[in-house]
Length: 148
Image (cartoon, rainbow, N blue to C red):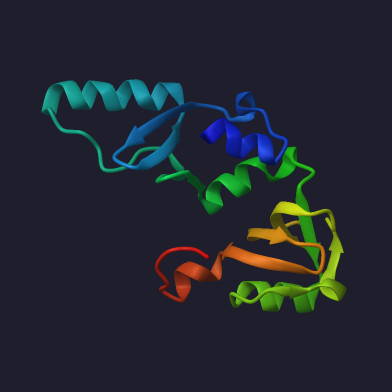
């Protein structure tokens, strides 16, 4: 499921530096040397960590990528939508972005949404007329649960 998600963004799983580890439904990307330390601690204490490394997503019915994964793969994907300043405001407040505020990335499909400075704002879906907000960085600040 993770590989399928990455393929939608044109990114090979090999680009991710580290080892993927599942803890419950969360998926983390962990550097190999850190994973060795975690395994030693697990053996000594008998406890499993709550989290380790960088959370890249959640396994539900399908893989739900985290905003950190967007940050990790942004430089490797062409599936980006660049929005202007007005589009950035709309998107960051959980709104969809009008076509005139989308500078690049006007092909249909899933997109990593970035501003004109290349900063990741979140995930969106471009339907040909609007850039739909799937999840944005302001999502956590607004205290919302779930995704659209």
